[in-house]
Image (cartoon, rainbow, N blue to C red; front, side, top):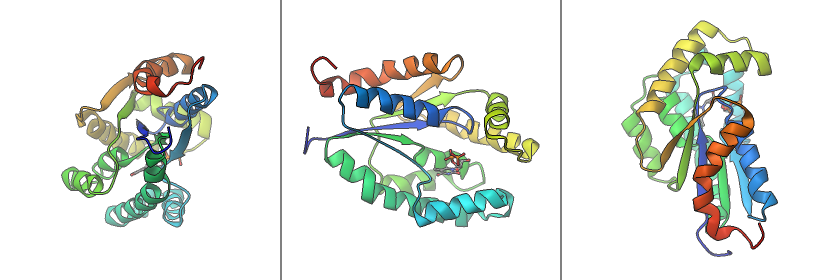
Length: 209
Ligand code: TYD
């Protein structure tokens, strides 16, 4: 539906929650059914996103939270201007692997004011139609990071940090947020996600889709 209003769907959760896999599965499913869908993630591959990843590799302990925050915000501005906003205006379904709820939770967990983070973001970010928050225990997320990414961060610190992040995510109470049980198989989680996405995208499904 060119010129129509698209749909903005966000997938959030702590590291190791399975966001990227679920975002991809949802994208493949919608594309297969003929729905014009865009899949993207934050941080992006802009120069600011690359800088964020560089800092993350050096170990986030060395990064200053305010500096990190500025980079996430610059990265997001570019993302909104060049990809998110235009795609929504063109009537597409936009699926994002992380958005400003990650900033509220991750930078909030580092001591920045979550109320300010929210208002800074709401000043320029399109409002989501649906935020799917994948819920898994922090220990399960850390186990998955170890197993699949072979990362060996300072797990003790990582666990206490992710505990704070999880608490910030748990405190979010926007009307467009739903919590998805992240346990079970990939297919189980995908089915739970689809149950919330279906009513939103029904008007876009082509006949026979
Ligand atoms: P992510 O892309 O999920 O990790 P990966 O590089 O393994 O695919 O995100 C990288 C990290 O950035 C993740 O630990 C969460 C963090 N992050 C923030 O702290 N604030 C933000 O606003 C965003 C979008 C991510």
